[in-house]
Length: 120
Image (cartoon, rainbow, N blue to C red; front, side, top):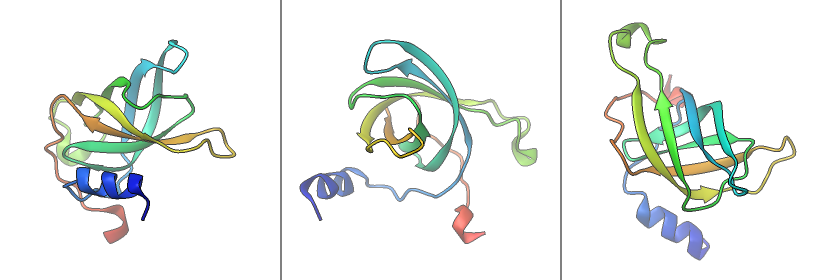
């Protein structure tokens, strides 16, 4: 395990759940251009999430993140979850031009419980 992987494992005290939820992400890319993108989570926990993006993001940059809850029948009366996140990991660009980005929530934490899609 590399030093970076070990550091990330120590920092991540909560198990991430593999679940695809719609996300709206807003922020600035590495060139300073404002963007807003609809994407989906690859995994999440109460204190963070990972998602794919076509934008080039720098570690340490701040993002606004919203998870709409109205699309879920059991949660139709809940408000959307909104928080701020700080980018803590960015993978190399894939052939499709997307990157996997990991964010740590620095605003409200995600309090909802979902079962992993791999367990369904």
